[in-house]
Length: 113
Length: 117
Image 1 (tube, each protein chain N blue to C red):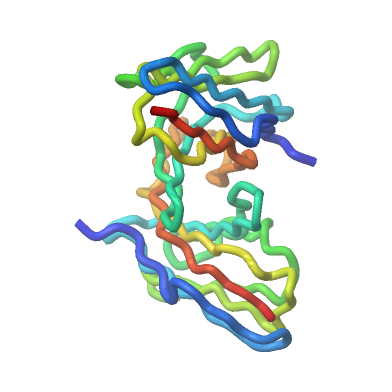
Image 2 (cartoon, rainbow over the protein chains, first blue to last red):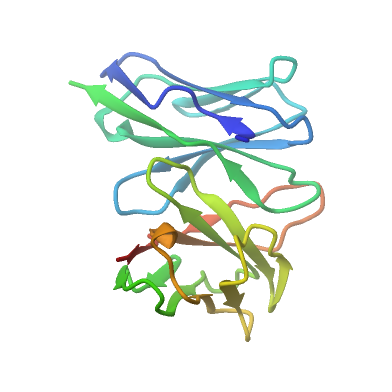
């Protein structure tokens, strides 16, 4: 059973517009949520994280929103740039208890010129 | 500075053979992780080392899989009697030791693509 779900395999967004990637989780014991970005033939690269005690974390063009009651988080990228085209993985961790990261299946983001 | 490196980048083997995959973590990182990414899936946790010892090996799928980190730096993932279902990209990550109540960024290597024919 998937504890971290990304239901959109792909997403296309016009350059300059906002990209919104969604993620749902089932385990209420998760206390950290992370987004990773992956280019072909490279390992995932950490993008941004949020603790379960917060509902928003912002870093430049990237903002992550967490809705604990809905067990839902989203990553907003604004404005979207061509270099943002990649696979984005939503991930979760019980950071206070162990170190393993549980990943979703990923969403492939295409930024259109 | 150098990131996490993994060798080989690609490995093709025949069913039933033994393979070893190597990971060189970032210098000074005491924590090391192995993940497996199958086609169309996200990375799946296999095992985590803190120093030389395996702190959590709950993700290893069966006893054909084994990993070591004898000196607390380089790690080797070993797969015996490989099966076609073992074909995947094997990712290694490293991080600094985790402080209580926090999470450390895991830095990933480029992975080893294993193909079992």
